[in-house]
Image 1 (tube, rainbow, N blue to C red):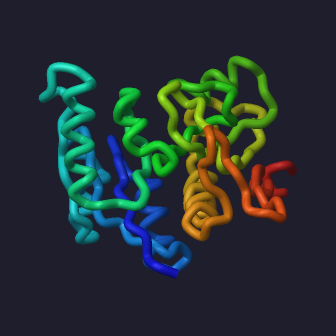
Image 2: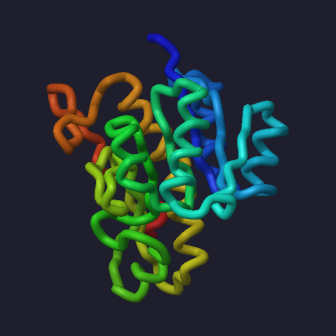
Length: 219
């Protein structure tokens, strides 16, 4: 299988970036990270990229008068890498409709909730406030509407007695590190694809919509 080119967008520590890179280097993914772009300087994610010899670029959003100008500069930087896929991995910017249209069907995000529940920010606090018993993460195609694109895969974790936003976030983040590479594997192998605003799975239907729960967490 031909190795596919990934550009990853980050804003912070880049832990999902690391998980994706590990999957690439261990041959779990037929892909190579050809560029990492951050909208913030001096992040832990950028420092890790430098140590790992991954090409990086900083496009600071505050250097632009509006989202349209920032997204144009971001798109120019992305296109220079000629990627097959553009991956959002903790990229804390809402993208314009024009930017999303440019990469529609190959722009992917991971969100820390079971969408469509709890889009946007503060998802773990929202889950606790709502009193749900299950929480998790969603890998999805990006569309102009925030956190509303077609779902590729989801994973779940239980909400435990005594959880606070920090403990719940840590459990979800651990799940993300396995869920994101698994979902990307399905995309890169052609198991599923974007078609007419939906995630279409190759027959026979093989969608891994829910990742197995660790039974230890239920004890």
